[in-house]
Length: 131
Image 1: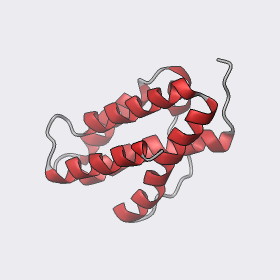
Image 2: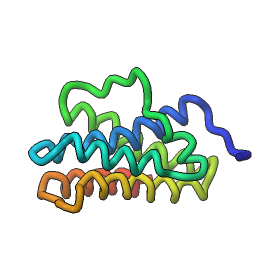
Image 3: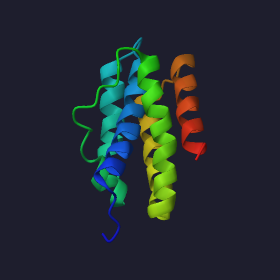
């Protein structure tokens, strides 16, 4: 693998992807937040390529906040930033990252979307597309 990203860039990708799963878990809390998080996490750790190597580990020591709004304030901009930096440094990996996060979001919905998870998935997709 010839492309390397800085430690801060890797942290941004981890915050974005793992945070997206956390957002979906919070949005699906009326169902099974644990299953949503588990399914989304499996999708992230199943990624391949540079993205797969980076997302194999969840971010350590990150404080997302106490509310979903505080979590979203960190994660949604990180999603946009992740696509932007991958487009600059590893254009092929930008699509890989977007697909990986999209699959994780779909997996977190567990095939049973509800209005809350559907809206959160929309916000995540918009953040990915904003780059």
